[in-house]
Length: 411
Image (cartoon, rainbow, N blue to C red; front, side, top):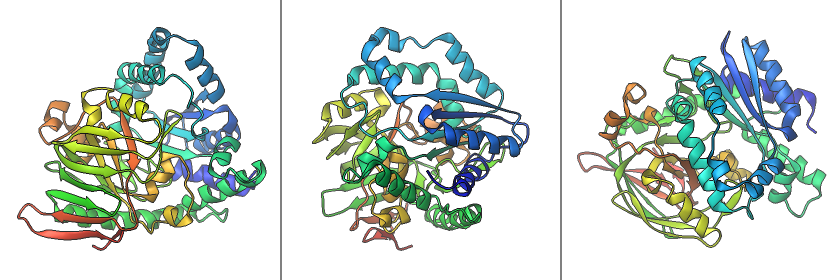
């Protein structure tokens, strides 16, 4: 276990820089039973920050697996009204959300993928009001990771339980700039400023498209949405509250135009989705749509994900991250998207963020779609950055600008 001062600083960072809990605000914390020790610190820090009330939603990956194993699809798809009312209440009260994650990668590998997919679809449909609240930045939200033995042993399988856990803790804390000396928030303020500099430059270029290529087969052109806006690091709610949705984060991201993606992308890291590790995969796009998919592991599950709904074969996000980012240089494959996506340029299948259109958070969906917005029940990031990634941006007048060379920003 980490020292108390280190855990306390991490909890303070989560509450103050991540969620930026406001005075008299309702706070909702999602956490596994295994990480209850950290949840208690977060709850205490939330109250110290002025929270009016903190509500806990507990989960347990073993029980979740039992439910998938023993319940029928019909039962899993039956989302009770009280759960819908619960999440509508969060929206009504203007809650902020803190997600504490740490499940074991691949834990659900032997669970029926159809059950998992249909249960996720049913939940996304029923809780759409809350989902739109979060993705539209109507309230603050943040995600942080807490190492567990199960996760650590997947990342460092040759080490003892204790050694693996200690090493994963070191990697996680390094990624969020926490060392116990109380400087983490100041470091994050500086980090946000650097990301802001990149997003400002990208917005000034106002590229029409980006072309990605590398030696392992990625050759992809992504048209950007009309009136697209780049963002990165901290974000703001529609009421002007600044927050960091991901701790860690190294990305500058924007919105692809739904029907303007063409070529092939080759993933450079496994995708851990719903407890299954999809590995060695590539996608082929034509006019924005995935028309071919290939994977060495769990390709059938990848196809089920792609068939979730009409929008799941289209992109909702493109994110640029230098190969020399701290997470990449740390050399740890976390097998967790929160971390691995910040070691590599990535794309997201599915729903786009309204904030990536200028003025988008105040638009209705039909208006967003005129700019190239993609709607879907899913939003799933996967990594495709590499040491030799080249990115060439083309402006509306045809001018070409080199954005990435040898995997890193050169603007």
